[in-house]
Image 1 (tube, rainbow, N blue to C red):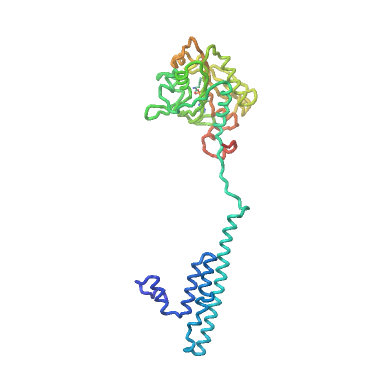
Image 2 (cartoon, protein in one colour):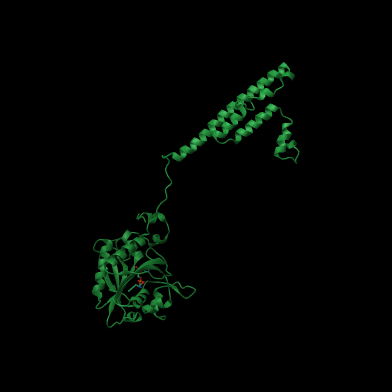
Length: 363
Ligand code: FA5
Protein backbone atom coordinates (compact mmCIF):
# COMPACT_ATOMS: atom_id res chain seq x y z
CA UNK A 1 0.00 0.00 0.00
CA UNK A 2 1.45 3.33 -0.99
CA UNK A 3 0.30 6.65 0.35
CA UNK A 4 -0.02 7.98 -3.19
CA UNK A 5 -2.70 5.40 -3.91
CA UNK A 6 -4.89 6.45 -0.94
CA UNK A 7 -7.95 8.41 -2.04
CA UNK A 8 -7.31 12.14 -1.39
CA UNK A 9 -10.42 12.80 0.67
CA UNK A 10 -9.62 10.34 3.51
CA UNK A 11 -7.98 11.41 6.83
CA UNK A 12 -5.48 9.49 8.93
CA UNK A 13 -7.99 7.34 10.87
CA UNK A 14 -9.72 6.46 7.66
CA UNK A 15 -6.30 5.74 6.19
CA UNK A 16 -5.54 3.28 9.01
CA UNK A 17 -8.85 1.59 8.49
CA UNK A 18 -8.34 1.56 4.74
CA UNK A 19 -4.90 -0.01 5.18
CA UNK A 20 -6.21 -2.57 7.68
CA UNK A 21 -8.38 -4.08 4.98
CA UNK A 22 -5.21 -5.19 3.20
CA UNK A 23 -3.21 -6.41 6.21
CA UNK A 24 -3.23 -9.60 8.23
CA UNK A 25 -4.50 -9.52 11.80
CA UNK A 26 -0.99 -10.22 13.14
CA UNK A 27 0.46 -7.30 11.23
CA UNK A 28 -2.34 -5.05 12.53
CA UNK A 29 -1.70 -6.21 16.08
CA UNK A 30 2.03 -5.58 15.70
CA UNK A 31 1.35 -2.08 14.39
CA UNK A 32 -1.04 -1.34 17.25
CA UNK A 33 1.63 -2.52 19.71
CA UNK A 34 4.27 -0.28 18.07
CA UNK A 35 1.94 2.75 18.24
CA UNK A 36 1.17 2.19 21.92
CA UNK A 37 4.81 1.65 22.83
CA UNK A 38 5.98 4.77 20.99
CA UNK A 39 3.45 6.82 22.97
CA UNK A 40 4.78 5.48 26.31
CA UNK A 41 7.20 8.00 27.87
CA UNK A 42 7.60 6.78 31.44
CA UNK A 43 8.43 3.39 33.01
CA UNK A 44 4.81 3.16 34.23
CA UNK A 45 3.41 3.72 30.77
CA UNK A 46 5.76 1.09 29.29
CA UNK A 47 4.59 -1.33 31.96
CA UNK A 48 0.98 -0.66 31.00
CA UNK A 49 1.84 -1.55 27.39
CA UNK A 50 3.54 -4.75 28.55
CA UNK A 51 0.47 -5.80 30.53
CA UNK A 52 -1.82 -4.93 27.62
CA UNK A 53 0.09 -7.12 25.14
CA UNK A 54 2.17 -9.68 27.04
CA UNK A 55 0.35 -9.83 30.40
CA UNK A 56 -1.61 -12.94 31.47
CA UNK A 57 -4.65 -11.74 29.55
CA UNK A 58 -2.60 -9.72 27.04
CA UNK A 59 -3.55 -9.28 23.36
CA UNK A 60 -0.48 -11.15 22.09
CA UNK A 61 -0.46 -13.76 24.87
CA UNK A 62 -4.05 -14.70 24.08
CA UNK A 63 -3.86 -14.19 20.38
CA UNK A 64 -3.64 -17.93 19.69
CA UNK A 65 -6.93 -18.49 21.56
CA UNK A 66 -8.88 -16.70 18.83
CA UNK A 67 -7.29 -18.61 15.99
CA UNK A 68 -9.45 -21.11 14.19
CA UNK A 69 -6.97 -23.96 14.05
CA UNK A 70 -9.65 -26.35 12.80
CA UNK A 71 -9.79 -24.57 9.45
CA UNK A 72 -6.01 -24.39 9.00
CA UNK A 73 -3.84 -26.73 7.00
CA UNK A 74 -0.75 -28.14 8.81
CA UNK A 75 1.38 -25.72 6.78
CA UNK A 76 -0.79 -22.74 7.87
CA UNK A 77 -0.65 -23.88 11.52
CA UNK A 78 3.13 -24.06 11.33
CA UNK A 79 3.34 -20.56 9.80
CA UNK A 80 0.91 -19.19 12.39
CA UNK A 81 3.15 -20.53 15.18
CA UNK A 82 6.25 -19.01 13.60
CA UNK A 83 4.56 -15.57 13.12
CA UNK A 84 3.16 -15.59 16.64
CA UNK A 85 6.53 -16.45 18.19
CA UNK A 86 8.21 -13.75 16.14
CA UNK A 87 5.57 -11.28 17.34
CA UNK A 88 6.10 -12.29 21.00
CA UNK A 89 9.88 -12.03 20.67
CA UNK A 90 9.57 -8.69 18.90
CA UNK A 91 7.22 -7.35 21.60
CA UNK A 92 9.38 -8.61 24.49
CA UNK A 93 12.60 -7.17 23.00
CA UNK A 94 10.92 -3.86 22.15
CA UNK A 95 9.53 -3.56 25.69
CA UNK A 96 12.96 -4.24 27.18
CA UNK A 97 14.57 -1.56 24.95
CA UNK A 98 11.81 0.89 25.83
CA UNK A 99 12.28 0.27 29.56
CA UNK A 100 16.03 0.86 29.24
CA UNK A 101 15.49 4.06 27.27
CA UNK A 102 12.93 5.66 29.59
CA UNK A 103 14.89 4.67 32.70
CA UNK A 104 18.08 6.11 31.24
CA UNK A 105 16.48 9.40 30.28
CA UNK A 106 14.69 9.85 33.62
CA UNK A 107 17.76 8.95 35.75
CA UNK A 108 19.86 11.06 33.35
CA UNK A 109 17.70 14.07 34.10
CA UNK A 110 17.83 13.37 37.83
CA UNK A 111 21.61 13.05 37.69
CA UNK A 112 21.90 16.31 35.82
CA UNK A 113 19.85 18.09 38.46
CA UNK A 114 21.97 16.63 41.21
CA UNK A 115 25.38 16.75 39.55
CA UNK A 116 27.27 19.09 41.85
CA UNK A 117 30.43 18.86 39.74
CA UNK A 118 28.89 20.91 36.88
CA UNK A 119 30.13 24.51 37.17
CA UNK A 120 27.29 26.88 38.04
CA UNK A 121 26.43 29.89 35.94
CA UNK A 122 27.60 32.90 37.84
CA UNK A 123 26.22 36.41 37.48
CA UNK A 124 28.73 39.16 37.89
CA UNK A 125 28.22 42.00 40.32
CA UNK A 126 28.70 45.54 39.14
CA UNK A 127 31.49 47.75 40.38
CA UNK A 128 31.31 51.39 41.31
CA UNK A 129 32.58 53.66 38.56
CA UNK A 130 36.05 55.07 39.41
CA UNK A 131 34.68 58.61 39.31
CA UNK A 132 32.00 57.62 41.83
CA UNK A 133 34.71 56.11 44.03
CA UNK A 134 36.66 59.35 44.00
CA UNK A 135 33.49 61.36 44.57
CA UNK A 136 32.62 59.27 47.64
CA UNK A 137 36.15 59.72 48.94
CA UNK A 138 36.01 63.50 48.45
CA UNK A 139 32.59 63.68 50.11
CA UNK A 140 33.87 61.87 53.15
CA UNK A 141 36.99 64.09 53.41
CA UNK A 142 34.88 67.26 53.24
CA UNK A 143 32.26 65.93 55.63
CA UNK A 144 35.16 65.44 58.04
CA UNK A 145 35.85 69.19 57.72
CA UNK A 146 32.24 70.11 58.44
CA UNK A 147 31.04 70.56 54.85
CA UNK A 148 27.55 69.50 53.73
CA UNK A 149 27.21 67.48 50.49
CA UNK A 150 24.45 68.81 48.23
CA UNK A 151 22.87 67.58 45.01
CA UNK A 152 22.07 69.97 42.15
CA UNK A 153 20.41 70.01 38.70
CA UNK A 154 22.33 69.28 35.49
CA UNK A 155 20.12 71.57 33.41
CA UNK A 156 20.42 75.18 34.51
CA UNK A 157 18.85 78.46 33.55
CA UNK A 158 21.09 80.90 31.69
CA UNK A 159 20.94 83.09 34.79
CA UNK A 160 22.09 80.26 37.05
CA UNK A 161 24.94 79.05 34.87
CA UNK A 162 26.24 82.49 33.86
CA UNK A 163 24.70 85.64 35.29
CA UNK A 164 24.50 84.51 38.92
CA UNK A 165 28.26 83.96 38.87
CA UNK A 166 28.95 87.37 37.41
CA UNK A 167 29.14 86.33 33.73
CA UNK A 168 26.66 88.62 31.93
CA UNK A 169 25.69 87.89 28.31
CA UNK A 170 28.35 90.20 26.82
CA UNK A 171 31.15 88.88 29.05
CA UNK A 172 34.05 87.23 27.17
CA UNK A 173 34.21 84.51 29.88
CA UNK A 174 31.16 82.92 28.22
CA UNK A 175 33.32 82.05 25.24
CA UNK A 176 35.66 80.05 27.51
CA UNK A 177 32.93 77.48 28.09
CA UNK A 178 31.30 76.29 24.86
CA UNK A 179 27.80 75.42 25.78
CA UNK A 180 25.05 72.93 24.93
CA UNK A 181 21.82 74.92 24.77
CA UNK A 182 18.53 73.12 25.19
CA UNK A 183 15.44 73.96 23.14
CA UNK A 184 13.70 75.44 26.20
CA UNK A 185 16.60 77.92 26.57
CA UNK A 186 18.07 76.07 29.53
CA UNK A 187 21.71 74.98 29.35
CA UNK A 188 23.47 71.76 30.28
CA UNK A 189 25.58 73.29 33.03
CA UNK A 190 29.14 73.99 31.99
CA UNK A 191 30.32 74.05 35.59
CA UNK A 192 28.98 73.52 39.11
CA UNK A 193 29.50 77.18 40.14
CA UNK A 194 25.80 78.08 39.81
CA UNK A 195 25.38 76.39 43.19
CA UNK A 196 27.21 79.20 44.98
CA UNK A 197 24.28 81.62 44.74
CA UNK A 198 21.67 78.86 44.98
CA UNK A 199 23.15 77.69 48.30
CA UNK A 200 23.58 81.17 49.78
CA UNK A 201 19.99 82.06 48.88
CA UNK A 202 18.75 78.89 50.48
CA UNK A 203 20.99 78.53 53.54
CA UNK A 204 22.47 82.01 54.03
CA UNK A 205 25.80 82.56 55.83
CA UNK A 206 27.79 81.04 57.43
CA UNK A 207 27.88 78.13 54.99
CA UNK A 208 30.16 75.21 54.14
CA UNK A 209 29.17 72.86 51.36
CA UNK A 210 30.30 70.89 48.33
CA UNK A 211 28.35 70.12 45.16
CA UNK A 212 29.69 67.19 43.14
CA UNK A 213 28.10 66.76 39.71
CA UNK A 214 28.29 66.20 35.99
CA UNK A 215 29.07 69.06 33.63
CA UNK A 216 28.91 69.38 29.86
CA UNK A 217 30.92 71.39 27.36
CA UNK A 218 30.94 71.46 23.60
CA UNK A 219 34.57 70.49 23.64
CA UNK A 220 37.07 68.92 21.23
CA UNK A 221 38.00 65.84 23.22
CA UNK A 222 41.57 64.63 23.83
CA UNK A 223 43.34 62.59 26.57
CA UNK A 224 42.50 65.21 29.21
CA UNK A 225 39.31 66.85 27.87
CA UNK A 226 35.85 65.29 27.68
CA UNK A 227 32.51 66.78 26.66
CA UNK A 228 30.94 65.20 29.76
CA UNK A 229 32.95 65.30 32.97
CA UNK A 230 32.55 65.75 36.71
CA UNK A 231 33.38 68.72 38.89
CA UNK A 232 33.01 69.27 42.58
CA UNK A 233 32.20 72.82 43.59
CA UNK A 234 33.08 73.89 47.10
CA UNK A 235 31.98 76.97 49.01
CA UNK A 236 32.84 78.24 52.43
CA UNK A 237 31.41 81.56 53.62
CA UNK A 238 32.00 82.89 57.09
CA UNK A 239 33.52 85.83 58.91
CA UNK A 240 37.21 86.55 58.15
CA UNK A 241 37.73 83.84 55.54
CA UNK A 242 41.02 84.38 53.70
CA UNK A 243 43.34 82.78 51.12
CA UNK A 244 45.10 81.02 54.04
CA UNK A 245 41.86 79.10 54.79
CA UNK A 246 41.55 78.21 51.12
CA UNK A 247 45.10 76.85 50.88
CA UNK A 248 44.74 74.94 54.16
CA UNK A 249 41.59 73.15 52.98
CA UNK A 250 43.11 72.37 49.53
CA UNK A 251 46.27 70.88 51.05
CA UNK A 252 44.26 68.74 53.48
CA UNK A 253 42.16 67.51 50.58
CA UNK A 254 45.12 66.54 48.38
CA UNK A 255 47.15 64.84 51.10
CA UNK A 256 44.10 62.75 52.08
CA UNK A 257 43.34 61.78 48.48
CA UNK A 258 46.91 60.84 47.53
CA UNK A 259 48.03 59.69 50.99
CA UNK A 260 51.24 61.70 50.61
CA UNK A 261 52.44 65.25 50.28
CA UNK A 262 51.64 66.53 46.77
CA UNK A 263 53.58 69.37 45.19
CA UNK A 264 51.17 72.14 44.25
CA UNK A 265 51.52 75.51 42.62
CA UNK A 266 49.19 78.44 42.91
CA UNK A 267 49.12 80.95 40.08
CA UNK A 268 46.78 83.79 39.27
CA UNK A 269 43.67 82.75 37.38
CA UNK A 270 40.75 84.73 36.08
CA UNK A 271 37.17 83.80 36.95
CA UNK A 272 34.56 86.57 37.13
CA UNK A 273 33.06 85.09 40.31
CA UNK A 274 36.21 85.16 42.47
CA UNK A 275 38.59 87.93 43.42
CA UNK A 276 41.47 87.19 43.66
CA UNK A 277 41.29 84.03 41.52
CA UNK A 278 43.86 81.22 41.31
CA UNK A 279 44.70 78.11 39.41
CA UNK A 280 45.87 75.38 41.73
CA UNK A 281 47.97 72.91 39.73
CA UNK A 282 49.45 69.66 40.97
CA UNK A 283 52.74 68.13 39.91
CA UNK A 284 51.96 65.52 37.21
CA UNK A 285 51.90 62.05 38.76
CA UNK A 286 52.48 60.39 35.36
CA UNK A 287 55.82 62.01 34.51
CA UNK A 288 56.81 63.33 37.94
CA UNK A 289 56.82 66.87 36.58
CA UNK A 290 59.11 66.34 33.54
CA UNK A 291 56.35 67.01 31.00
CA UNK A 292 54.31 64.43 29.06
CA UNK A 293 51.39 64.29 26.56
CA UNK A 294 48.90 64.38 29.47
CA UNK A 295 50.21 67.42 31.35
CA UNK A 296 52.32 69.22 28.76
CA UNK A 297 54.62 71.16 31.10
CA UNK A 298 54.71 68.87 34.15
CA UNK A 299 51.75 70.50 35.93
CA UNK A 300 48.09 69.51 35.85
CA UNK A 301 45.44 72.16 36.27
CA UNK A 302 43.17 70.63 38.90
CA UNK A 303 41.49 73.12 41.20
CA UNK A 304 40.64 76.63 40.08
CA UNK A 305 39.67 78.63 43.14
CA UNK A 306 39.60 82.04 44.79
CA UNK A 307 37.82 84.31 47.24
CA UNK A 308 34.13 84.72 46.46
CA UNK A 309 33.46 87.92 44.52
CA UNK A 310 31.42 90.46 46.58
CA UNK A 311 28.80 90.62 43.80
CA UNK A 312 28.19 86.87 44.07
CA UNK A 313 27.69 87.22 47.83
CA UNK A 314 25.22 89.99 47.12
CA UNK A 315 23.39 87.87 44.52
CA UNK A 316 23.08 85.26 47.26
CA UNK A 317 21.68 87.80 49.72
CA UNK A 318 24.82 87.85 51.92
CA UNK A 319 26.41 91.10 53.06
CA UNK A 320 30.03 91.25 51.71
CA UNK A 321 30.95 93.78 54.43
CA UNK A 322 30.20 91.17 57.05
CA UNK A 323 31.14 87.93 55.36
CA UNK A 324 33.81 86.65 53.01
CA UNK A 325 34.41 83.24 51.56
CA UNK A 326 36.33 81.00 49.21
CA UNK A 327 35.11 78.80 46.38
CA UNK A 328 36.74 76.15 44.24
CA UNK A 329 35.80 74.01 41.24
CA UNK A 330 37.67 70.73 41.56
CA UNK A 331 37.92 68.67 38.34
CA UNK A 332 36.66 65.34 39.70
CA UNK A 333 37.23 63.38 36.50
CA UNK A 334 40.80 64.66 36.26
CA UNK A 335 41.33 63.80 39.91
CA UNK A 336 40.13 60.24 39.20
CA UNK A 337 42.73 60.05 36.40
CA UNK A 338 45.46 61.08 38.82
CA UNK A 339 44.17 58.91 41.65
CA UNK A 340 44.03 55.69 39.60
CA UNK A 341 46.76 56.44 37.04
CA UNK A 342 44.34 56.44 34.08
CA UNK A 343 46.19 58.05 31.20
CA UNK A 344 43.25 58.89 28.94
CA UNK A 345 40.09 60.58 30.20
CA UNK A 346 38.04 58.93 27.43
CA UNK A 347 38.23 55.54 29.19
CA UNK A 348 35.82 56.86 31.81
CA UNK A 349 32.93 57.33 29.42
CA UNK A 350 33.62 54.50 26.98
CA UNK A 351 31.21 52.08 28.70
CA UNK A 352 33.63 49.12 28.59
CA UNK A 353 32.95 47.27 31.85
CA UNK A 354 36.33 45.50 31.64
CA UNK A 355 37.92 48.84 32.52
CA UNK A 356 35.62 49.53 35.46
CA UNK A 357 35.92 45.97 36.80
CA UNK A 358 39.63 46.53 37.44
CA UNK A 359 38.76 48.89 40.26
CA UNK A 360 37.09 45.88 41.82
CA UNK A 361 34.99 47.58 44.43
CA UNK A 362 31.68 45.80 44.56
CA UNK A 363 28.41 47.38 45.49
C1 FA5 B 1 35.42 76.34 36.16
O1 FA5 B 1 34.63 75.57 35.66
C2 FA5 B 1 35.09 77.17 37.31
N1 FA5 B 1 33.70 77.17 37.52
C3 FA5 B 1 35.85 76.68 38.53
C4 FA5 B 1 35.88 77.61 39.70
C5 FA5 B 1 34.97 77.44 40.73
C6 FA5 B 1 36.80 78.63 39.78
C7 FA5 B 1 34.99 78.28 41.83
C8 FA5 B 1 36.83 79.47 40.84
C9 FA5 B 1 35.95 79.29 41.89
P1 FA5 B 1 37.37 75.52 34.64
O2 FA5 B 1 36.74 75.80 33.35
O3 FA5 B 1 38.85 75.76 34.68
O4 FA5 B 1 36.70 76.33 35.80
O5 FA5 B 1 37.09 74.02 35.08
C10 FA5 B 1 37.39 73.57 36.36
C11 FA5 B 1 38.07 72.21 36.33
O6 FA5 B 1 37.20 71.31 35.67
C12 FA5 B 1 39.36 72.18 35.50
O7 FA5 B 1 40.48 72.52 36.27
C13 FA5 B 1 39.43 70.75 35.07
O8 FA5 B 1 39.99 69.95 36.09
C14 FA5 B 1 37.96 70.40 34.94
N2 FA5 B 1 37.57 70.47 33.52
C15 FA5 B 1 37.23 71.55 32.81
N3 FA5 B 1 36.94 71.24 31.54
C16 FA5 B 1 37.08 69.91 31.45
C17 FA5 B 1 36.94 68.97 30.40
N4 FA5 B 1 36.53 69.33 29.19
N5 FA5 B 1 37.17 67.67 30.64
C18 FA5 B 1 37.55 67.28 31.89
N6 FA5 B 1 37.73 68.11 32.92
C19 FA5 B 1 37.50 69.42 32.72
